[in-house]
Image (cartoon, rainbow, N blue to C red):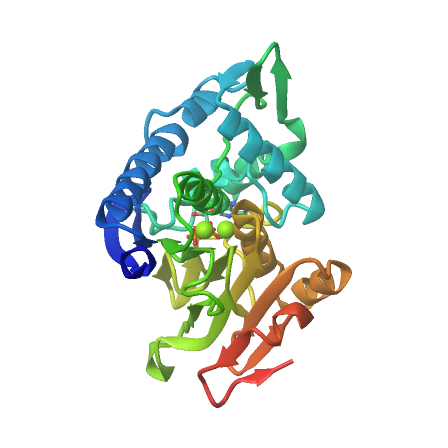
Length: 325
Ligand code: ADP
Ligand code: MG
Ligand code: MG
């Protein structure tokens, strides 16, 4: 039975959705891992063609036809409904209708100027997820946003897609593997029986090493939002790419990074963005009120970390200066 127990491994990296998508795929035969790799490649492309807001996609059709009932795929409907729910739960710290502000600031895609107060004010008025409707009629899903509104699923889509990819790989026969969509990691099964995957939590400060801690994970998503991603500097101030629907400006946060571990990748991704935007005190209060949300918050001093009860025996610090609370 030697041959049957043997594991073949294939590592792939592709560029999609403006991000690096890598996969470590394990299987019983070389043919199986090749099949998994092809599935990852074709599905990532299919989702990118469905959900990117930077090209003509069915999701973008909702924006182009703002004010009308637009037919959408079941996946867009499912992700949008999750997004609307999390927007409610987080008091719009995660706000999927942030589009008009994203397109005004263009942070991470060419923006390097601070818009006028007037332009910001006009954009804020359009940002409101309560005006969005998603419904099914005779087996077809529809979505309708308000006139002038603009949906941006950038803070949830990669988590959602990672989750869907993992589900499809499992249906295709994969029992373990690791997907990474630009820092949105999904652990399929364990690395080896009895040995979970170990996922490094990136340090925002490279001089301290690449990782500040490592988390053990199996059958769950590990998603991180950090201050070190896309941003620009102007007059000595750094503008990050997560915006506040209240001020219309990049959020000022005392959190360096948020990691969420959840069996639902979309939920983890959206909550990550929300907690980051809330800042330490509000995020801490949110976690206290929602013990089912498992998170690691790293403070801007890079020395204090808040670790959810459920993750305490799964996290290992790499940085000896780290104080875990
Ligand atoms: P990344 O995907 O870069 O790791 P996020 O998951 O936090 O980071 O998503 C950030 C993206 O989400 C932004 O580039 C923008 O498109 C969108 N966005 C910005 N601010 C918000 C917000 N308050 N709520 C929801 N989405 C946002
Ligand atoms: Mg996110
Ligand atoms: Mg993200």
